[in-house]
Length: 412
Image (cartoon, rainbow, N blue to C red; front, side):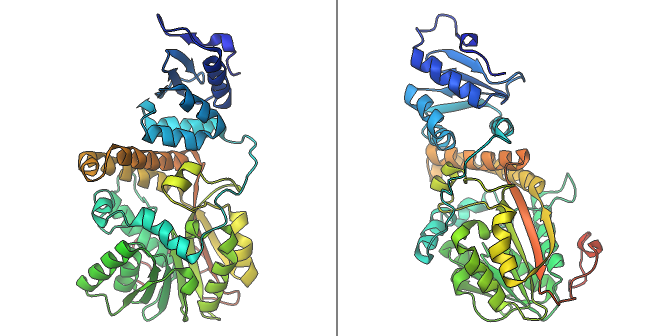
């Protein structure tokens, strides 16, 4: 049971504690009861939010911050952490995961905040905010291929570079790519998957993106590696995709589409996929049930983003076009491990990153990476890969045997 008001106690020799502070801390403790967290206020008042030993202490430095935490906790916590009005001493990831566990399963009315999706012009601005921070910044903590999506760890001791190569190959095997085929990729990042498909599976790729920094990097590196005749990068988003392809792939782009635009994405996929043997893979961050996206992430990290439940994606993207869904896999634990690697690398370059930006930027990105790791660890976020094809197609194998182990049937 959450503690009664009388169980809170001021630190020795602390100033008198006001009734407002006492009431706010009582409410906060009841809302988060079960989290392994110790809370200390600026005036010395202390509360422990569960029976388990705390993994961190949260220092709240002023009354306005405490009160905001009761109104919009996720947004208020993030903004206060970045502004240094709130400090966390201890394990930030474990603390956030513990809060997620404490809140799991509690009733929540979903207000659809930020779920509708952006226009084409707004989408460019949203992408610019996050992805055009500088390729040198991302190179500090991503792997050498500049892959900014969930890796696949076949072994606990695999390096990030190994796990990202395995992930790229895993996607290709799921698609059963064959030499000479054509592939359309929607949202290609820095081009790692497009290059991998062309180099190792002998396919021709058209990859779409609207980040100018990523496109410049992808084109330069692809030309340097001698793959420009097989990979074309197009400055456009999913709405402008045209032509025909044997396979459609989207890794980490659906989160930016928005619920209102799922019918359009499904229409584009249906239009470009070969009518007989077209197949595809869509890889995205999701939820177990429809729920508001973290408002701090949506405002300060990924403007306009939304992580959908399967029930929100299936009707408009797949069912409306009679696609056969062949496989749905959840890789959330792999994403938790990926984020642990990213956060460790980020922390190892904090001095350099702070020099390029400032302290607030460092705290923003530390909290983003830590909270994402905590969400995948606790099961608050999922990572879905959906494989689909045309209903009459028999190109996909009857078992999963060919998915596991290096080198699929189509690798050249």
